[in-house]
Amino acid sequence: MMLDLSAYLVIGPEQGGDRGVLATIDAAAQGGLTAVQLRDKHASARQLVNLAGQLRRVLAGTGIRLFINDRLDVALAAGADGVHLGQSDLDVEQARRIAGPDFLIGLSASTEAQITRASALPAGTVDYLGIGPVFDTTTKADAPPGLGLAAVARLCSGTALPCVGIGGITAENAASVWSTGLAGLAVVSMICGAADPAKATARLLVGRSQPVRSAAR
Ligand code: TZP
Ligand code: MG
Image (cartoon, rainbow, N blue to C red; front, side, top):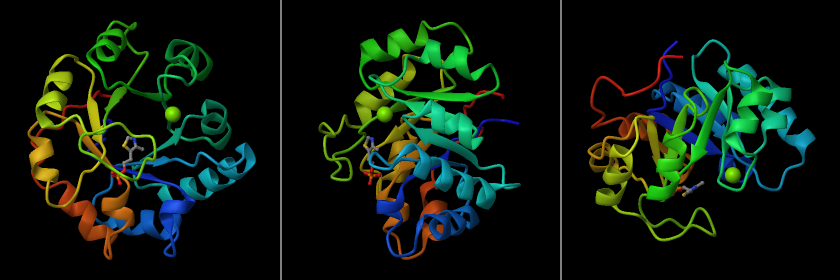
């Protein structure tokens, strides 16, 4: 199955709000969601595995991939499709050895040096790169200022790996973000904060060029 990262929702209980994580994902799925990342920096491993299990059940049969932020142990225990690792999380080559060849691994890489290093990894180590923040965002407390579209396009063109952009993407700017050559757009508030998550997800996909540049796996 092709790895389609084009509409990528990052969500945890906090962002799920009153609607809740499962209902938000369910609604976003109607709008064309292709990937979900469970991200909760405060939950215990057990809480995360439990919630991930619920997400798996909601996503079963949809083809939407489930990633867990930071925690390979949780991702494997919950039977998620993959993990998203940051530059200070578990090393991706170690993660690949633990997880085996079929598991998906995403890596945050937002500088030229990080992109170069990630691109030099043995083939099959990393499935995609996360680049951000694309624009300024207040959703992530410690996020640096936005890179801007020109820098994102440059970073993206520096690697053969599919890249997903995150940070400050809105209904108003999503189409312009697609022009950078990204394989996917990842959002928190555009979908979680929307009155209609299905519509917001569909809007995220406006401007996507075909075919999606994604690895076949
Ligand atoms: N990583 C970089 S920016 C960000 C994360 C998790 C938050 C993105 O949230 P929003 O609301 O889509 O700007
Ligand atoms: Mg992380």
